[in-house]
Length: 326
Image (cartoon, rainbow, N blue to C red; front, side, top):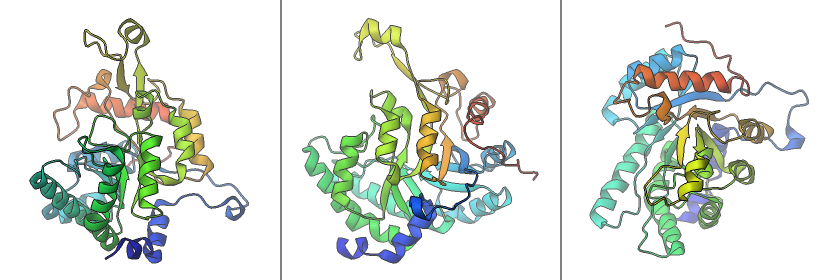
């Protein structure tokens, strides 16, 4: 299947657009405003206990960290159905362009299987890094990513109605970490219906970029969201700079509201375009048990971070999802 054939797949593009429920053009929006009710969830590994707890707290979405093994699909589907839990994405961060040809082949094969499992569970997205090979020039890496995805991933995406989303994690094998990376990748893929953004504003803060303006500029490519904040420890930064000789940490991830992000403005960007996808809390706050959560079940200390984040977010996002009585 050629790239032209894939990109021209209008029927699938329409299906994917309906899954992500992006905003209607202003002239087609309803005359009477409706309440904004995106899915609200948590990110974590699949376990029956995690699903049950998340639903008991009123969350109606999960991002499943690491995906799901194929042999567990019937069990997972049964558990999700029982607790009326929606899953917006698998989170599978791998290096699609691993410099080792042997390792790359294994990674690519694993990712294709993940796409197929997502299709079986009706999960519309897989969050990942773009892939990266620092030994090559930037544009060559972009070209390699486009070629790899088109040849190996997009046929599976088409069969399973799955889109690949890039999270802007700057420490991983990733070019999709900034507007510069976004522009180059989306230019390379043209109007492909199989790629988009899993937006996490915390990663832009720690890179000293504007997460609000970036969200505004790329809002039509945002299909899934991580809710996580970043706190800049300014006294440490001013004393040691961004590369302190003593290794002091000058930033840390926090739950929403405990860092630097203006969440009111961020949610306005999404609400203004009628975003109806999912927004899930990614709990990496060391003050709320992120360093004491061996898993796979959420620890009690770790759960407190989700609860505190939920409490803060209620002032901006409708959170009237009823906890599951099951």
